[in-house]
Amino acid sequence: MIFGIGLSRTGTTSLAHALRILGYKIVHHPRPPLIPSVINIIKRFDGATDSPIAYQYKKLDELFPNSKFILTTRPLNDWLRSCEKFIRKGGIKRDDKFRELFYGDKDFNKETYIETYKKHHKEVFEYFKNRELLVMDLTKNFNWKTLCRFLNKKIPKKKFPHRNKT
Image 1 (cartoon, rainbow, N blue to C red):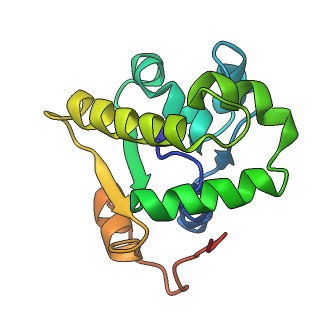
Image 2: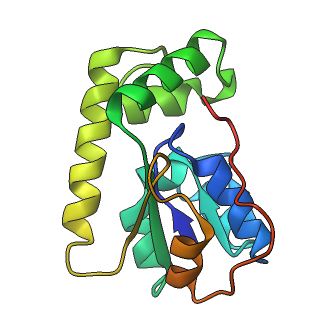
């Protein structure tokens, strides 16, 4: 199993597309988003990405031993601008309850988003400090070489997908 544990707006859609190109069956932002319901969805796939996965990565690690974990990230201020734009445009309303649970607010609140971003990264790095974790920064190393080396896959001839560029 492969889990993309980056927050929404960090390249999770691009990662999901890249994993599909590599032959994996991936669900992006599974719904309903919370355990135990999400387990029934994930079981039908080779992996999952986006905030519902990021929110529950420790439990998913217990439930799916020997999984691979990828943290997509990007600079905080770029991420904040992208989140604000997405949410102010209407975001995905059906995610309001989950967004409030994870980010502390169903609307965009800069302070709570900064807190969530920093807390998530700190906890992920602490949790995986003695384990393998691939960190992919959208602005630096979001490419086939990095991903394929981590997954022990051959680099495809296709260009690396870059979705939702804001």
